[in-house]
Length: 311
Image (cartoon, rainbow, N blue to C red; front, side):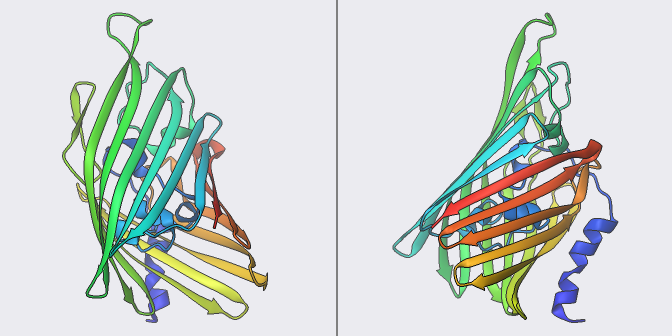
């Protein structure tokens, strides 16, 4: 079987097999960060842009400008993410931050949050965040990386003694990622061990971390007048949950420096409230890059992400 067809297997499995992952948190660890991976089935462990550092520290890249990603789930959730990097001697250093502000009912005891919680609304303000520092180096033609991560959930809840008194519950964790990438089959293979750490304490109980191993492959090549890209990934999470995902994108350039493109991807979702298929689009004009991704949830609700870069 040709390699490209073989790599499409995760994409087909993502559509065909429903799944529910083990409850884990904080919530920011479960979400795609930028528009491109969101539209490609979150298959970005072998990704090629600066936001791939959230999936694999071996992908840290030195940026030559600035960028930001804005997101919205439903009508009440807002997200923002940013990354940067620089080369220092033989190492490339990078940092990233992802902030999620959303609301739920203060009488709802459900925790940890699932991604579908972001599409609702309520009278309790919640917050989730992820911040990381990463370093990458080249050894034996492999790109090797490690990142330290700090993540936190804040979830106000009513006290048992009074329905009027609301107190914030905070849970946070320090985690480690390690990863590698290497050229393979005219593409790039990536391997990462993510969210290495112990359960954290939230509201008097311990909550599991979504520790996992991710293996993926990406490829970029011309296809007639189009630029064709492919990404695939398999993820094995602690507890035995297996997630698969992938996607394809096509770009067309009618003049040097200008390009439009479209993306489609699918993945095995965390819960049944998420839809497996996602879509995206991109537009490049000289040094400006605009990317858009949309995900789908139950009850006709959506997740939107807009990534802006200036190089």
